[in-house]
Length: 218
Image (cartoon, rainbow, N blue to C red; front, side):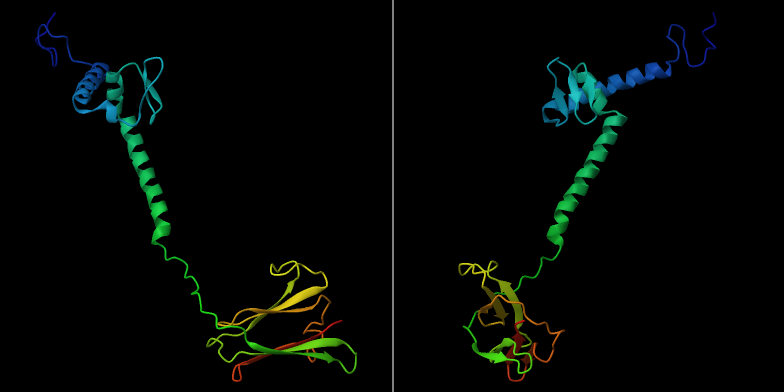
């Protein structure tokens, strides 16, 4: 047999290695290199099973010994999964840091209360319908610049200062920097401003700093 003209081969050699032999040789070289440079004790993805085998928790693969595991860590699959894991960790870190970078909600400054405002309550009666009602006048000379008094009605069960009384409800008025005040009134239905704007109304005089409101009971 003529070995002289055989491509890539010399007399006495085993011939040109095929792709499978080349892959085996490459894995062996990578395994030896990894054994010399990698400390398995610091690998967060290695897991020793009760059967004595090794598992890669990143790729979910099983290996019979450390050499096989190290060869796997140098392969394309493991390196690709490492890159994906690093990208995901970076994304999660950015998501955690993003709320910190956003400006926090501006909290309303706590103001020093200067006491209760002066007020006057007058009982009224409509001359036509004979309905009873109340007229409130509150003087607010030290009200904050640009502030307007805020009014609301509160049920007896909503407030926490007194024992609830079904027969009462409260008219609450707030205006900085004064203390919030509340008036106990009968728990009856009242006429709405849309029904009778002449007898049921509220008014704020910014020049005189006087708030007024009037309503009638049905």
